[in-house]
Amino acid sequence: MLEVKNLKKHFGHIEAVKGISFTVEKGEVLGFLGPNGAGKSTTMRMITGFLPPTSGTAIVCGHDVQKDPVSAKRAMGYLPENAPAYDSMMVTDFLRFAARLRGMSGVALEDKVEATIHKCHLLKVRNQSIHTLSKGYRQRTCFAQAIIHDPPVLIMDEPTDGLDPNQKHVVRSMINDMAAEKVIIVSTHILEEVEAVCSRAVIIANGKIVTNSTPDELKSQSKNGRLDEVFRRLTLDDEDDAYKPASAGEKDAHKLSPAHKEDM
Amino acid sequence: MTSTRNTATIFCREFKSYFESPVAYVFLVVFLLLTGFMTFSVGSFFERSTADLGPFFFWHPWVYLLLVPAACMGLWAEERRTGTLELLLTMPITMTEAIIGKFLAAWAFISLAIILTFPIVVTTCHLGNPDLGVVFCGYLGSILLAGSYVATGMLTSSMTRSQVIGFVLALVLCLLMLLAGWEPVTGYFVKWAPAWVVNAVESVSFMPHYSSMQRGVIDLRDIGYYLSVIGLMLCATHVVLDNRKSA
Image (cartoon, rainbow over all chains, first blue to last red; front, side, top):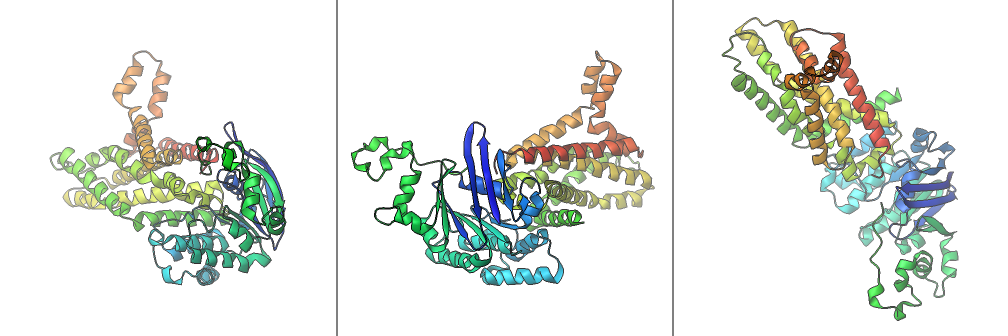
């Protein structure tokens, strides 16, 4: 259903993504994990056809994103990081706009917009301008835009980032509801999310895949059965040495490095 | 078919977005006041006692210079800044559809402002007998000129995520295009360069094409000039957006 083939991206001399390949089948929810700056967003932007890769490609339901971007994009729904949306538009108008670009029209369009507003619990805010929405509603509006055409492939970049626990729960249950009949990729750095929604986890660090397995297998690799321990072991690089769980006590405090830069 | 539909969808959203914020109203009011002031006070419309719109059209290139870049600076810069570009370009549409839709929306908005100056035509008709053919031709030239400004503003807006930079670059680029045909500039070339160089410099300028249409001459070469400036700027926008490094 979705096949990512050796995607690479260079920004000038910086290699942001160094050859990533994986496949996701229908019914799977793939958790795309990694520290900030590991290349998660860049990879997703290449899969969705927003950024041209330096080399490699992605095949979405048989359509090559590089060779036939319009057909590939038609098969995908995408929720970008930070849920961008046209601030001055009303929620309903925004969804109509998305539906129209997705090829719907007339009564079918209105029905679909109605159904999506119900599904994403947007009834209360449907006539509000997007810039007046709280973060949770904004996220859901952008999420609604991604599922309005019922795409076989759904790609979400940090869908629960910055939401309160209740809103996180809503988004996760929406993902779970759709999981059976779609290919879903969710990027996150929240590990509890992996256990809550994902059937498989790909961890990337410094632009490379370091592991690709199920959450349970990952947990079994850890001494105490916790995901965060495995995550740290796999993704820490030399700069972060001081944070390494085993040796943290022996290092001097001044060796602590600043946190990674935010994703490009 | 789908292509026209997508362009139309983007056109509608963009055109409406002007009116969803105070931008459209501020712009229209300032545009009308400014053209009115230039025509009546600076251009001595009444004192000339001739029933034509010469002083009215004379100021258009200068009023546009200030206002059109302001109306276009957000076209792409704002999309880049807020991240909606990512949303737009992952929809099943082509870059060309998005560019043309946005361009036509901005051009239609400026054209609306130009058409709203119709009372001055009514006034002139009331006071005398202007040649309506010349007036029509003047409006056509003015709208085409505005189209070239819009396309230029669109190009500079696509280069940056800062609206201010987009504005300033558009202003400078439009000013260059205006001044290239100005006598002090062409005069500088006349002294030493062969005639074809002078002609070449003059012909890239907005001005000669604009003034010939103000005299009531519809020359296909003038229309072709504006359309090719627009085409060139839109292609350049396409190249810039294709080569962007990130959002």
